[in-house]
Length: 476
Image (cartoon, rainbow, N blue to C red; front, side, top):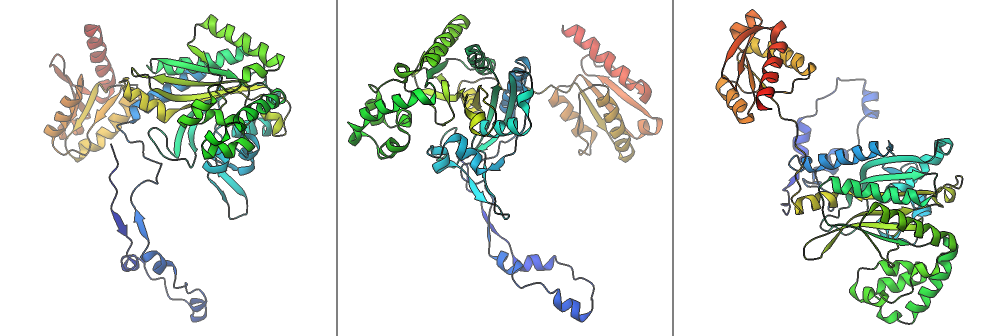
């Protein structure tokens, strides 16, 4: 739903002054020297405070959290199954890390990166993607000596100053998987298998992988020469952005979403025809592995990905609807030269990232069930001040013994609390009144059979567990 524009509230200087307490009087000289400048309150007085998120950023509200929780659980479970270890890197890094690894001519660095200079004079940037920061951590912490492959998993927000659109925000979330230290194409196949495992476990259907190989930088130069010759002959038919790209990063013309550029590049030279022998053999073996796994894929010779560090295998993950419209969920590929380009030892690597915002949107579109929190089976009601004090201790004791319990401590009347218990559909209700608080007892009511008994605090946990176990047997 479209967000309503929040009201604009002005901070009143007069209101702020009324809240400031006077400090005790001091010596005249010191009081005079410590007198504040007449700027702080007055400058803020007319400043407008917009009560809304920045453009391209938004809150993930409680109603949406069940979808996000299902995604988080699926990612974490898949990471554990495939032997990945969690790593969390800073949101802010030195900007040159991204310009050096991603490429100075990429859209991310040219137009989309949030970069700024700190008070100390450091040029830094909000991370626009995960892999460069993880590669930096790999080098900095000497992970090259660990048994190979080194498998690392991350989840968190990334930032790009891009045009906000459906499922695409300036602050968006990604799940990221990286493997360092192995060049065998079976790792490429396992990476794609892992990506498919995650999206299919989330209940998404009609998943397809688009795959290509762009070879190594040396062989890619010959391909770029052929591509430039083809595009130069029809330069006037390209969009202005692609004309500019032609001189700096011609392969990215293939990634343009403009219809006229798409039509023009249909018959462009293909990277597969210019692969070096090593890349050709690597791609052939990868396809054999994917056929063995029976994973759904198509070869897309126009697929190049938008970052300079990619080599050999590149792929993207798509979901499609009944009308044939496709939705991108993420992508990845090999980056065998990234670690070395940043100053580390030569280390082959492969990985992928999933756009969690897009995935949640796709889950809603295809009516996938969100995660359901475990339901409380016990409710604790209390009446009176002394009963409230005792109930806090009882709540803690029941929770420590693994009993999922609900309460409504803020409600005054017993009747209103019991209405909450009925709405939750609990199996057991515990009632503590003034008399029970004095006797250190509690009324335990079985909401299924309707029976109830009064038990001491020492017997409470056992009494509740007995009822829950009996009900579970009857329901089973």
